[in-house]
Amino acid sequence: TDTEKGTYPHFMLKEIDEQPFVMRRIIQEYQDERDNLKLDEDVQRAMMACDRIYIIAAGTSYHAGLVGKQFLEKMAGIPVEVHVASEFSYNMPLLSEKPLFVFISQSGETADSRSVLVKMKEMGHPALTITNVPGSTLSREADFTLHLHAGPEIAVASTKAYTAQIAVLAILAVGTARAKGLELDFDPMQELAIAANAMEVLTDQKEAIEALVRENLGTTRNAFFIGRSTDYFVCLEGALKLKEISYVQAEGFAGGELKHGTIALIEKGTPVIALATQENVNYSIRSNVQEVVARGANDMIFSMKGLEQDTDAFVLPRVHELLTPLASAVPMQLLAYYAALHRDCDVDKPRNLAKSVTVE
Ligand code: G6P
Image (cartoon, rainbow, N blue to C red; front, top):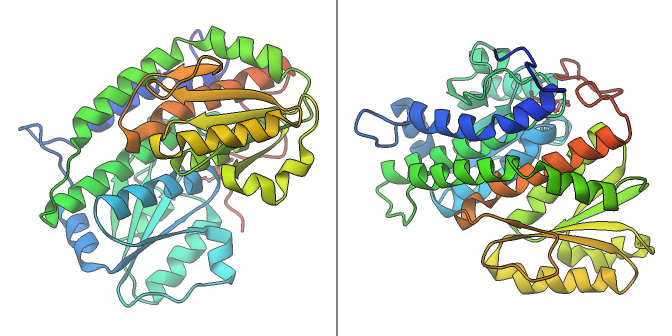
C-alpha cells in the first residue's frame, strides 16, 4: 500500500520508483471521456482573467515553480513571477493590477506559504493551490485546488511530488492556452506519456547511478550542479536533494555564472554534475564543463539522447524539450539516494528536517 515500504529499504526509493505510475495517473485524472485535457472551468476563468501569476512556494515546490513558470509563459502567454514564500511575506513586490496567486505545496500545510495566502486573501486576490493533499489548509483556504495525485509521500526528501507538480503545471499551462484559443504545437498527454516511459527506463538504471556515486561522490565534501535554462532549475533541485539527505555541501549554479565566483571553489577532484538536455545551450554548457575540468574538476555530464557526446557520464532517454525535468530529475534523485546510503545517512528522516514545516 501507499503508506508501507513493502520490499523497499526506504520510502524514498519506493517513491522514486512510483513516478512513472504517478505520471500515468495524472494523465488519466486530467482527461475527459474523449481523452481531451480536462481543466476545471473556474480555474480556466481565473487564469484568463489575470494579468500576472505569482507562484509562491518553498523548498522543492519552489523549484517546481521555476520550471512551471516556463510552461505558463511559453504556452499560456501569461507573465509569471516565482517567489520563495518566506521572502514574499516580508518583502512584497509591487503587484500587477489583476494578480493570480498560485501556491505550490506538497503538504498544503507549509506555514510560510499559508501566511502569504492569508494576506493575499485579505487583499482580495484570487488563489489557486496545487497540492498533494486536497483537504489541507492551503487547499481549503484558496479559491481553487489542483490535485497532484502523487499518493502519500512519506520520505522527507520530496521526489514524486516534485515531478507531479511539474506535470500538473504543464497541464495548467496547456489548458489555459486552449481556453485562450492559442495554437500549440504540443500534445501534453502524449508528451507526458513519453516522459512516464522515460522515467521507467531511468528507474531501471539504478546500478549505473550507484556506480557513479561510488566513483565520484563517495567521500566528497562538496559538489556542484551546473546547467543553463531549464537545466539550471533542475540543478537547484538536484543540489537540494543531495544536501538534504547526504549532507554533502551541494550547490546548483547557472553555467554562465560560474566565472563570476563559484569557479574559485573548484579544486582537483571537485565533483561537477552538469545537465545538458537543452539543444540551444548544449554548446555553452559544455564549454562551462571544459572550464571546470581545466581546473581539475571531476565532471559528470547527464545529457539527453540526441545531444550526447562520448565522454558523457549518463544519457537520458529523449523527452519533449519542455518536459526534460521529468527525466533529468530522476537520476538526480538517485544520485542523492545512493550518496546518502553510501554515507550511512538516515535516508527517509534526515537530521534537522521535517516533512512539512508548520511554523514560520
Ligand atoms: C519542507 C520539506 C521539503 C519541502 C518543503 C515545502 O522543508 O522538507 O521537502 O519541499 O517543506 O513543502 P510543501 O509541502 O509546501 O511542498
